[in-house]
Length: 640
Ligand SMILES: [Zn+2]
Image 1: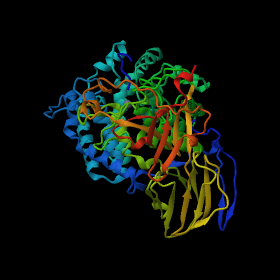
Image 2: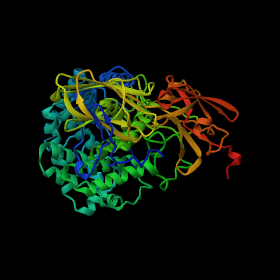
Image 3: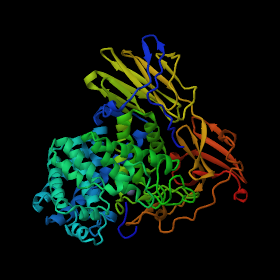
Image 4: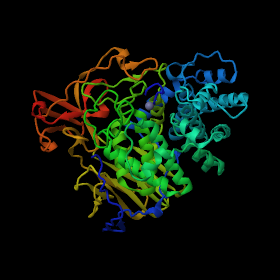
């Protein structure tokens, strides 16, 4: 989240269009073949079709739901009511929801609504749905009292400041969150009132922005405006009303989009999260209008950020910004790396681009971010991280239960409510298995249930079980991730296939699937390393998709250093970075020669470093320890 006052990743060679065939009984394997004509044909299953079964994701989703349930609707509504002139005696929340904060309402009427809508759809949590319905009813009263369609927890003054070029934190950013929450309550929780309220807000926003000439609008759009274009395009798609597409165009910035359309990286100096949201708007615009320029912008942007600006955990940014030229992350390891909202939005963008292309590299990258930069960013109380420190010797810090309400509290609450949304996609009668997460997919129209049984990543593979009352010919596409080896293997009903897709692609298995059929997929993990962009002497180690972190001992036990109160997003005195642990080997030495796998299922590793021995574990398992993700590959004295 920006403030007005300051403010190897993956194999690009993942081949598309290459055909691999083999035969196995009635099974015919064909590597997915895609073209532009396939755009939009792969889609996610409805959220209520997929359920998590016991495992690490279900555990984390349950924690998040308990956190959401702990919040009180009348307290969330307080500032909205006061702003509308409706009395409220509730105690308002603090931090970014404090009645004096210019972002108030972003979480309480926005992220919270999205999160409970998602949770009610993905887990059937009726209590959270009831909280969401009550909140929507309260917001409806506020909007009606104001009378113009405008709905916010703050008065119009902040928008006036925007017009006059005076300081205003981010009024449209907040406005977007509320609209998005309402649209989600309509789409995922079936609340029809929520759609009406969102339409009223859209009309006010369109009238307000439409009242200015293009130059004035462009000046105003220098202020962070979140996903205004995305939500307006989505509203157009839901309501079939073209006027919302016109409204979305009012939130378009040629100065930002044009260089991307020409495949130029001019991102240095820009605020990361502000701009990823704009690209999601471009992606939705392509999907709804078919204008390929927006698709080209989105695809170029995503590939550029992931190849030229990403850390090994699958996220980007320093102090929330892109501060360096492409491919130069040297010198940027710090406490304030990788704002968690950016990971949330990049993953959202990856889902869009994957749905157009079917290209496995986007799901490889999604997995990288999911396991390393989302899993692990919530503690046992449901509190979330803001930054993801990558300097050595840092530790995780979290928002307080009721005194923070950062943007990352909000996107985290949404993320942990929607783990099911990307596991399976479909096209026609075909299924895509994108992620290896214990779950079931109930495709009612087809009379088919796909159960995924796995302890991944403790288990190096997964098993899919088919339950159906009427056998049918269909293709099941299984991602063979780029990190696995040529020893990956698939067995159908216990019999191994004699052919396999390359790592970094989808294996397409076409046959008449009958009740009781099984697909067992073995995906061997190996150690590999990935240098920091711009400095080959600094590397991170991965085991399969998992970033391994060195355990550097206990972190602080005092709560102020671990749980951040008030509006700040870092501890008051974050620790000074320690020197990176040293491996005493040059970068040319292969990973397997300096990292020892102690327990593949326990995910424990050892490094005999220079002057010390280190225990390593997956980054997502680091809770309270100090850690280092990166290694100095040779002693500093040997470096020029
Ligand atoms: Zn954030």
